[in-house]
Length: 255
Image (cartoon, rainbow, N blue to C red; front, side):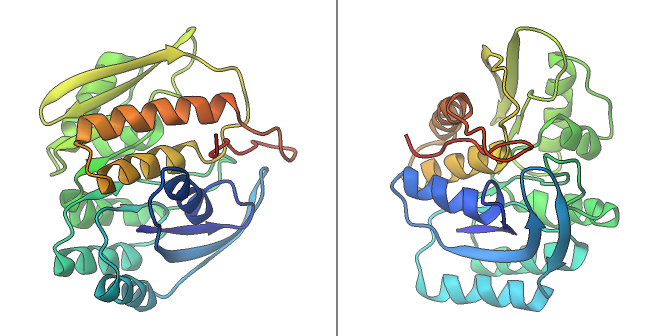
């Protein structure tokens, strides 16, 4: 199950999550937290769903469909975060991957500033895995990240908030031929390194990576296997990304 916003351009959010689930051979249910008017260049508008209706979507899905794993993406405001957290607690859902979506690829805000602390207090402690990029990790860990060692410190700080697994994605780190993602899994570090791919077509990378991890968990993989599988998948998805639109094109999910 994905709990996230709708991307009218189809490159990220609910649309990216469902495509990734289906590409991995798992069924996907969806809970929409917000509608966005969005393309590869900009987010022209956001229309959040009422928090009580987000909760009703989650409750209705879980009453009927046996959800093995879930992920969250764009949550937008504190009321929606609290509603999601309450339903996750009530359902006893433990296989939760939290992608702390704060800013779109276009630079537009997807999480209100006053909602970050609510995310830290209410939802992050319920997550099995959190997958921030560097700007998100800096905000959550309240520090500046300039190198891999800083990424490790940030991962540990976020893990102290409750989640036993944290993956800090290094795509925003400037310079260098190699890209490093840092995984802190059950107290142990794992560095995932690949050659940096020269492309602007990276729309939906965070959604797709976290959805791939979620799909792996739904298939019964352990966390390390799900992270490695998701990491390999997103690498190919970026390599095969579409030059669609005038901005950041979407990654390719079906291959």
